[in-house]
Length: 245
Ligand SMILES: C[S@@+](CC[C@H](N)C(=O)[O-])C[C@H]1O[C@@H](n2cnc3c(N)ncnc32)[C@H](O)[C@@H]1O
Image 1: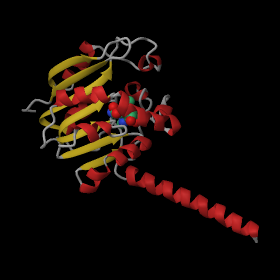
Image 2 (image 1 turned 30 degrees about the vertical axis):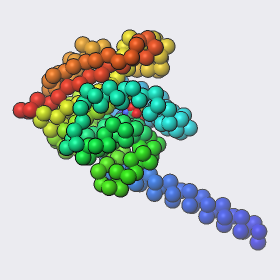
Image 3 (image 1 turned 135 degrees about the vertical axis):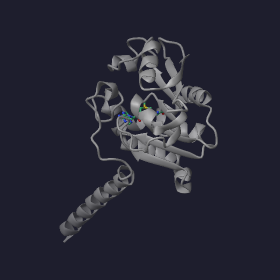
Image 4 (image 1 turned 90 degrees about the horizontal axis):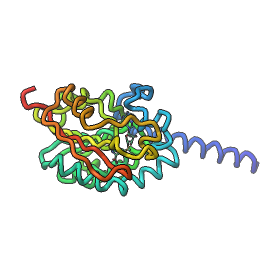
């Protein structure tokens, strides 16, 4: 009898865990496309949750990363916010939003914020940070890929991608004419032992960033260096979609 009770408890517990996991996943995954993530695409490999370095954004290491990132990147968030000059009537998309710290700390006054990420773990952290705004209907989190943004043409007035992948043509498409974008990427002048280089990331210099954004149609490309390589260092690219486009 005791064995039956134990078995029933184990079965019930397992069912509860599976159902809870499915529910939690459904809340996030249900908001985005089911399209496969572009893990094999070199541009997305380094930070991609399903790729070679997936542990950075998933599992116990991902959890630690989600807690440390907002602390380590606080200075970058400040510089991005300054360059973007967010206004109350902006509609902001943060591509690769991670734990949502940029949206939660620098976009509180913005009418609508949307965070997109390919890691359910990161999205759960972001959900915790943005709970009030999600409840108020002014923030939304979407599971999906930077390569195929699940948004309408011209849906946003501002886009950010902070140490996260950006697909230039897609970012251009979802911005409305005149909309602004700020992108932060590790500097190629970092030391070769810096994780971004050591893990195989392809780091681009100023000229390469400029060419990629201009080729996609962006104008007013301005590039700023932040931090001091080789110990750290970021390149911050700011640009806009032309008003008549
Ligand atoms: C280094 S973290 C930066 C997170 C956040 N932008 C910040 O600065 O706090 C990179 C983020 O990009 C997400 N990511 C990686 N590849 C992605 C892809 N192809 N599409 C969408 N998000 C992606 C990861 O899950 C991770 O949360």
